[in-house]
Length: 552
Image (tube, rainbow, N blue to C red; front, top):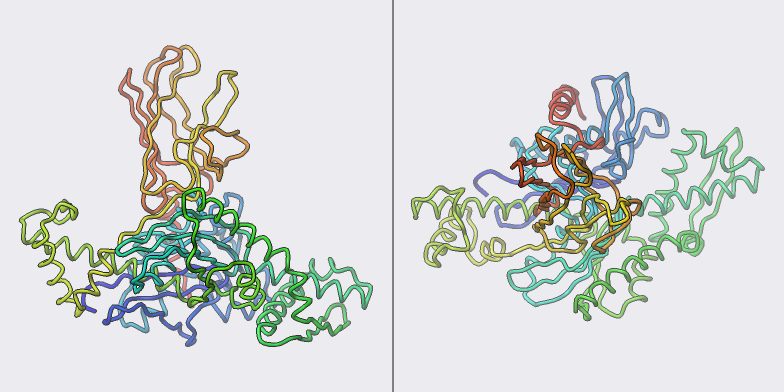
């Protein structure tokens, strides 16, 4: 493939990987420096200027638990999460940036080129702050993040790009730390998300924790040492987590395993059968099924009563209990689809599609004498488009039908959250008035009038909120603040003065807010002030600091 590559990155809770589209137009996952297709999302702060990421970091977690971070993805967007190592404080964005630098650095060495443009994936139900934090992690890693796209949509693109039959698929994505359930309609030239849900605190890590609990309980029964004593000892706890993951993987092919638990000079051999493992984790699996049923009900309400196929995506779907239970639960076809690599491949395809779209616009601009940035593809004459596509296909060694299959594929997402603003009802009680509702197609926008509450008011705080509730008006306690913008009027206004508020949710799910007071003409375009997101100045400072550190 000639031209600048765009890489797709699956920034996972427990494992991450990177992909690109090869000269044949096929997505390919790239091996890391250790020869593995996935890299453990574990970071070891070995010294003030040396960061170790991946398998080497994972191997020392039990030895240096106070210098390691795992499953940081679960903390993305959390304003209260920070860790201090060697006198330096790090946010989730910082830690994630080191994971990105590892996978990107290894891929760059393999490909023999500098990697800049990337598409990063995130759980479908990530909110504004989590998505923005993910994008900032890429910036801190020195990358140009073109898009942050939902993981199930990426998986659906990887699956649907070669499908020639109309179908509705259900993507059951159970990763190491998160769970997504998304219904997607695939038609010729169109991939449309119907609805999406999930739980960002549910994943393979919870199955590991269940095994740890079982092992410590058995140790307590044999020795009398309280299970909590083992869990409170960081080194022992990390050893137990490693053992739990080993047991889980072994039970995918074996009926029983035996694990030695050591603590306080005592050792106990604990037997764990697959049947027992299934029993102690049944509640976790049931949670995924309950969330799946919720999304199926939402899809039925939208008129989608027939599901053609369920795709199992994510490394945790290798567990036999998941495969067997899902197949027994649902009547439609269940297929395991490239669990560890589908998301990264889909992200690479999305990035490649964006790149080809740009190249086609350039060719159109050359034919029509326009500025490429002002080309409106929908209004281009068929013969001009055909020539532009043919030239780009030829330049990149692609067959024209293959290029068309990708660039003409329209991808429509939905928002996993509702977005609104705090206002006051007739009883002067604060409520959230939602302007954008969950499962609306994105990009989307909404505009509604609000009114000043007091006489002589000189400003208004626009508290922007998100929730998973589909109602137009909800309680403040049922939602989470994602940002604050202040609209100053310049002079006191009368009570009941109208203020126009517009929300826009972009294709990447990021929110922008615009407020307009028509009497004074004052306007504000919101850049959220939120504790969990770093300011531009903080990002630049952290980027400079982080890029000076060695990541291996």
